[in-house]
Image 1 (cartoon, one colour):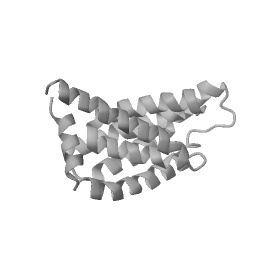
Image 2 (tube, rainbow, N blue to C red):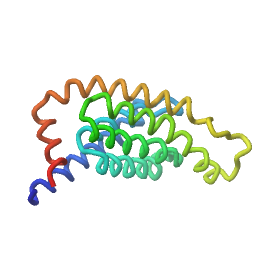
Image 3 (tube, rainbow, N blue to C red):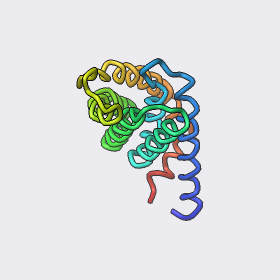
Image 4 (cartoon, rainbow, N blue to C red):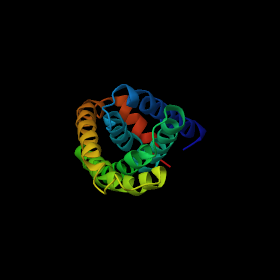
Length: 170
């Protein structure tokens, strides 16, 4: 892949980052970020695990620095993006990244949030291991259902398929 393909990858990644950053606070439920899950799943299908994780990390940093979101932005997004991308690459069916997002964000991300928040707040007296799990699962399920419905149509669009090829070729 030449320079044009590399530029197209970066442009698509930048668009996905912008969409994730702009949509997440607009469609937010207190303690849940379903639009982050939507974008994780779409990024996993469109760009694969590496670029999906890059998107999640950049968006988490932007949310923390510009919106004052705690470090849960990292734990909530990165594991879901990674697992969604890996599962989609293993079997390219639309429901595989949904499972990855729900397990990655809902379970792994929620459990990883406990030690992060203990370090962040300096206390663990009011926290316990599963405190984040219901909200992370809720956000991941809501976002994954929305992503599934969107992907049913997006995967039929020629431009989406063409964009996928930019990330599949080396």
